[in-house]
Length: 69
Image (tube, rainbow, N blue to C red; front, side, top):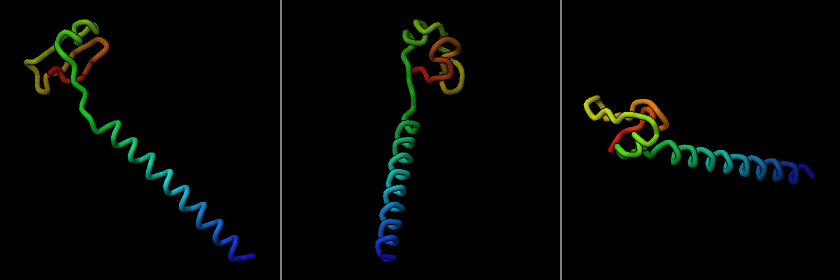
């Protein structure tokens, strides 16, 4: 009987650890890719492409802060 409890605890711990690793991998993938917009997308979103500033940001509007490519 105690072996079954220990085995159940080990399986539950492994399952929860697997879910945690999956969540961490998803979060890293979602945040790892840089976001670029075209100058026309920036303007259509209500912003202004400022290629004269470091990082070439879109200033204002829907794409505020995203890099203009």
